[in-house]
Image (tube, rainbow, N blue to C red):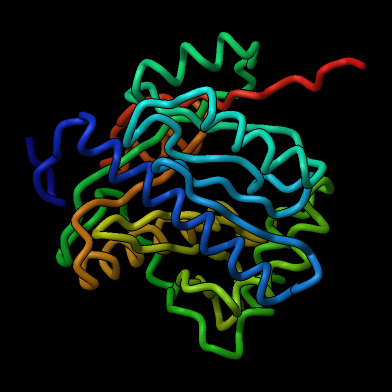
Length: 279
């Protein structure tokens, strides 16, 4: 099937492996950036049997695994090693698990009394360089990639957009320094020469992962994120990508906006948590 962006691949194991690996590598890139920007932070990552495990601090949302059971069956020994990786660093254990993962993953997670704690919609769409989104653009919004000396401007603008969520304040304060050390791409939307919104994108093996969406309160409802989305999709296609990827809470406004702009739900992913054992 097609739309203005091209042919939609089937949501099968082949696609799921591409999407899960792209998101895993984007998180690995973040952890590498953290390690370079803050060497004493202890940020580390490992790969085990196709699973990517990241530690970015005990309270960081990046501290978890991706691709469990996507490339080979999961064993008790695998989970022992993964759990030890987190617990030795004082972190709780979380796994993002795709429903297309090998059945051994679900069996062992239940055996070990993991609990599902969160769902997320994984959305995708085909892209090409002449892509045009259906909604009308605000011609006064200008989008561009950030310059090498604008990482702090990007991080400051992103932080303003998340200012109502105080639990992320520490994380956002350090984002500029980390972004300067990453390979991901950063974008700004400007109105009358002032930065009002941000977006980011990571590219791995032809998949463009979209993230970093944030708009300052006074810049909202003016089409900044739509402009950022179209610009990034075109940019990714020009870099050789054929698929764009993003995540959203099921049924959220973010999911609805993504579907309005040609994204489809590939699958709903589950985050599993290992409760701490009482002593």
